[in-house]
Length: 623
Image (tube, one colour):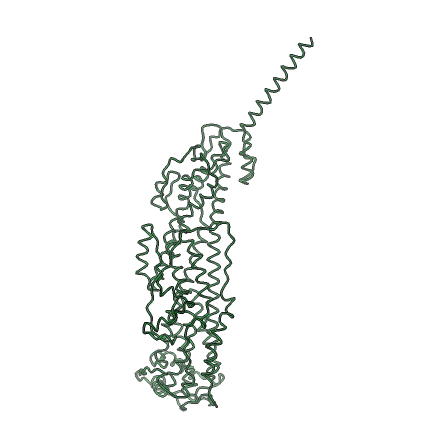
């Protein structure tokens, strides 16, 4: 009896062991791993994941004839999650590019504004010291004039240097005419200023270009500023557009067809309880290129924009005396002084011409001028319709009157000791940083796939099953090539990205024409379309640095570059910097972009001391 009981106990033990093994195998065939991955990635409510594999005929993406751990509601959650994940990855890759553009846009703008402000203050001292009769009324004119230059350098599309200079000299002419050429009628108090005086001043403004009281100097100023500020203005416009393009790519909406392909690539393997296997590289490339076809279409025009940005930065960093922004701005004082001297030298002829065109101006309460000239006092206002008389163009330097020559400014020469190097440093820093992103948008799909392929595996997920290698063809990234994409149907690009591409192409070509670089850029575009890139061949002339002691190259060629207010235009070598393959730094801290405006006081100190001393001495007159 004891033996029978022992046998029954042994049988019960076998039955229990069998049950445990069966239950264990049932748990192993469950969806526990799928539920864990679903919860860890925070895809959606974990209650949507079934405990055991089953069949769901409502599946539309991860269709499988066998048992599955997915439901139609899980597919919807997977699609929302994979879209969000892809956009977050895109933003993480473009973060440094966005920060680089925004930081340097601000830094360049602060540098430009600091240079213009310094020049404005320097020019104001001309009126305070040499033309005190004009000082109080000229300061608002200077404020508006240099404010317009700041807007021009910021890339304001409505800004025009020709209009800015013309308005400044139009407003300056009545002051010079009334207070320097005819000081007896030039100091009417504001409360006694009649409508007749206002209309006479309006006539002076309207006829200034015909009377030409300032000779060739307004035109020389326009030419000098246009030549020197063109690169800075173009850089500002391109940087603004580049920032807008990057923002547009971050906000791009992934299509539903793209979402389905991403789910098949990333999460359909989970439905088969394969939560650790990675997608095949070729599958990922096809899917990402299909999803980002609009961004890939930006690749070619974006590459040309980066090459142009490099070229502009090189121009700002290595420009000669004639094209140097800092020297051109500092020379504004010389141009204005030369223009006023020209008017004083031709005072009688200008007065006679004005009286024929606008009529004589009634005299106001006379005030002694600090710089007396011939006094013209009239008692009545008459109208005249005489033809405009052109004044001869005479260089003030050709006259050797002691009073006028004492005000003649020394030419501002560029030299190693005098020039601020802050703009040059900022430009070279930007040139070296932006070149890494020339092919950023062209290679963004591949970069996104590299993050998915960090672990080397002998097998991969093909979107349908586990394979050793992807069997489908890998198509190109263009819209035309994507029509053959085996993973998804691509019919059109995002309208926002299409507009961004058009703006890139339009602005780049427009600036190339404005800068006179269009002919060489056309050859570079052909190279880009054939898979090449626009290379830079830095000649020894353009690569010349101040530290190399080669500032006087203009004189060696026979051009006198001593006077920075000269209107001569030197030859410019159109050289572009070499493009580099992009290496997007993913794990580095954002670059610290510091505006050169922070160091403006220190950088301009040698320039200020050396330049202002002779200028102030030149205006001193022995009593």
